[in-house]
Length: 74
Image (cartoon, rainbow, N blue to C red; front, side):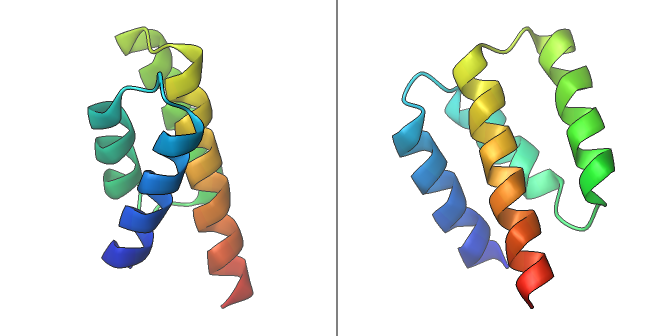
């Protein structure tokens, strides 16, 4: 799973160049194992708390979506 998450992070950071790398990495690595709805709720709570820009929010949301789709396909 770690290699998959690393690959997802790399791709979303390429797509959203203004995203905060540390925020994306930390959020996606720490959200593994949680339910999708919990991850999304935490995303928006953290986004408000840390005042993330739109690229950071979109990068994390995209990463969560890809991780969720991958989980469903297994």
